[in-house]
Amino acid sequence: MSHKLKAFFDKDTSTLTYIVYDEKTKDSVLIDSVLNYDPAASRLTYASIDQVLDFVEEMSLKVHYVLETHAHADHLTGASEIKKRIPSIKIGIGKNITKVQEVFGNIYNLKDLNTNGVQFDVLLEENKPLKAGTIEIKTIFTPGHTPACSSYLIDDMLFTGDALFMPDFGTARCDFPGGSAKELYHSVHEKLYKLPDDTRTFTAHDYQPNGRELQYKSTIGEHKSRNIQLKASTTEEEFIRFRNERDSTLTAPRLLLPSIQLNISAGELPKAEDNESHYLKIPLRK
Image (cartoon, rainbow, N blue to C red):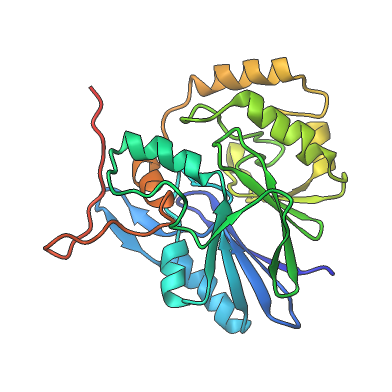
């Protein structure tokens, strides 16, 4: 069965949100949502969520899951806010999110953070199908960018998160805590590139290099032949050397500190204090 796809682009964070849905049964899943955040004013807004949920309402869709490809470092997830609006929705992420929680729980000194993944409704296991009505999702663990990265295969559609961007942009960085260029190489080369060449790929971000128009769909065959950082012919040694050298020149993502802090908790805000305001913790480095 071939399901329908709708993509939404948040220009501020270059993030793609996807809805896969069945036109007949109205079953659907949502992948990588965005909660808008202005760091200068430390203000949350909901334009991206509203746009997605307007489509859900327009199409009378039943959203079973909000899936995270990983705990993103460049935008806040809208999963928790979406679940508040549609309480029947379940939030899912790869089970290795616990590794990320342990690392960043220490970095932020989050004493009350449960690092067993309990903030998420479903901890996904590799190759164990997840059913959303008529939609079946296969989880493929693709660590390297983070230990908890997953790609999702639905029909012939592969949602690669940050493992693969568009072929003209390459792959994710691997210099975050727990990241590994070697692991990312094997995730892509030994897992994703083993899929049929006509498998359609959908990236979590498009940074529109050289000012080109938005693109988010490619194929495994196209990546194998012309991904500028990791082709089928690229050796492990070549990729690790390139990725490590490249990553050493990159600055931290603009929303790294607020994003990770919320995203390891499925987007749930810290508890309000006695003045009814919520506060993020920002570590200072000396």
